[in-house]
Image (cartoon, rainbow, N blue to C red; front, side):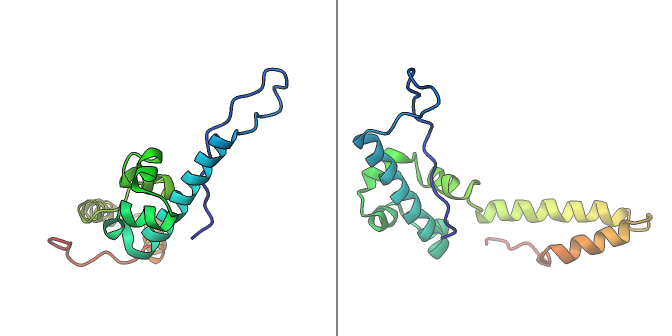
Amino acid sequence: MDGATFTPAPTPIDPVDAEQPKRLNRRQAAKVRTRQRVFDSAETLFNDVGFERATIRAIAKGAGMSTGAVFANFEDKTALYVAVFGHPPLTPERGRELVNVLRRAQGVLDAFADEEGVPELLADIRAALPPLPVKAPADA
């Protein structure tokens, strides 16, 4: 785990003391703890087995909760993944799309390879990125 934590929505402000956030009642605090346990379990499972192999049941079990507790806090597995990592999971289809975008970008940059400064830029880009597969996998 990278130590990420779920940040609950701001609590209502007490009109008497607008600078002091209202304390959570027991029920609200329990909901925050439940959501954090689900979040932590999902983060561990997604890192260990990946999005496709992680199941809501396994996430719930890791959190010591029911699947209902997971769904009470997150719409579905994708929403949970987005909450944990900040972006949707990379599916094989999306991976192929990204490879194609990178190939097109590489083609544009290669077209300007003889311009001043471009060879150095291309060398820096190639050094920073892993090599693209020679051929996009058909059904990866």
